[in-house]
Image (cartoon, rainbow, N blue to C red):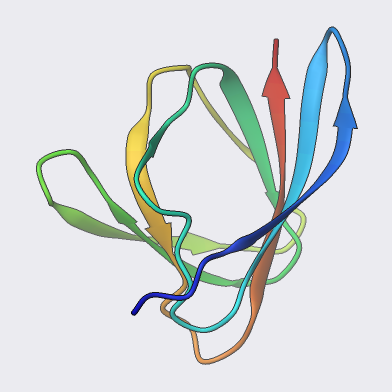
Length: 94
């Protein structure tokens, strides 16, 4: 059984939704589609495993405080392959 990543909603207004995501080792978001463009800011340096719609897996190497942006429409499952908790802040643009 996969452990679920834990979201904490920080802000949700007419312009943005900001969520802090925490992943225990092996935890996953579950399959989802991003309906809005978003920015991720890792709180910890580490890796995330991304599983795409075709089942292809990629490993993202992330550094604490270095953001990245993605357009709406991304579909994936996000999994923590680290042996430690991983966390990031996600800002969705409405």
